[in-house]
Amino acid sequence: MPPTSASTRVPVVILTGHLGSGKTTLLNHLLRQPGARVGVVVNDFGDINVDAGLVTGQVDEPASIAGGCLCCLSDAGGLDDALEKLTHPRLALDAVIVEASGLAEPGTLARLVRFSGVERVRRGGLIEVVDASAYFDTLDDGRGPAPVRFAAATLVVINKTDLVPAADRDEVLARIERRVLEHNPDVQIAYAVGGRIDPRLVYDAAVPEDPPDELPIAALLREAAADHAAHQHARSVTVTTPGTIEPARLLDLLEDPPSAAYRVKGTVAVATGQGPRSYQVNLVGRSAHVAAERPGRATTETRSELVAIGLELDPDEVWQRLTAALAPAERPSTDGLRRLRQLVRVSL
Ligand SMILES: Nc1nc2c(ncn2[C@@H]2O[C@H](COP(=O)(O)OP(=O)(O)OP(=O)(O)O)[C@@H](O)[C@H]2O)c(=O)[nH]1
Image (tube, rainbow, N blue to C red; front, side, top):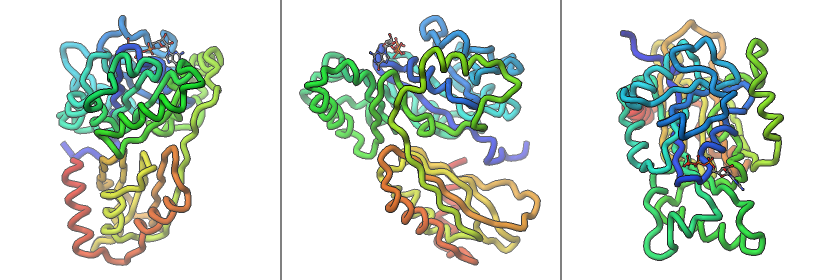
């Protein structure tokens, strides 16, 4: 079998959180994003109650995908079996979200995805949902070390902030934030009501609108849920450069990304003896994935582009970092090529 093309890798996002913290609410919010094609893996449909209208078919009936979501029950076949089906190129999903039961241990799930035997998977991050109003009564008594579960997260959503009395809110949220950062100082933190985070933090929708040939279920549900309510908007910074780049500078960025950049994605071109070679770059949290594109038809234009997305991005700082990462080079340095190839190897 030919090697999997970089473009067919599907980000697998893990959603964890204590019982009742708001995982399903957040998942439903993400599924309402216009134009999104998302696969969902759940342990138990009965338990999870994804909005019925959004659950449009089992994975064996891909023709019925509508309103964006295709759900798949993780049964005896295990997670890999579900991922194998949902990452099939014929489904062309933008992302797969694995919603864990409230009792699941985040580190274990992260390892299941990281060491998944499924070739078309790439890590899409781990979102841990926290109930701000119940945090110090359930997860953490505030004494001793903070819960170790945060160590596996790339994004922590401090949800239900509306239930914290206004007078105490700043202090309670700051205390939770300090506990979250204790084991994971690089983690991105978002605040939410009803799980409403900016979907761009999690994945890219293939198209900006719902496809015209699909049922208007997602649109109706969006209206019903008044999902246009405010959420913290993610910022993004894009830098494009013509021509080929120096991989060592790109690796410098991927090994030490700007702290406020939650995702960095793009395509870069590197010169080779046989002409430019393109690589797809994806970083979520601190985990980078780089894959070589299959050599395609020769193009007249070669360019490299990176986009950084995050909640508190400083646009000037990030622009400078991305620009430095895309330093033009007609010929890559030996050290740069070695580091790039090594990252491509560990990304396989
Ligand atoms: N007030 C308030 N309620 C919320 C918020 N987010 C979720 N809820 C409610 O909290 C309850 C639990 O939310 P779920 O999304 O079912 O939580 P879950 O983490 O999926 O729950 P389990 O699957 O049982 O672990 C539901 O009644 C939600 O409507 C929020 O930000 N504010």
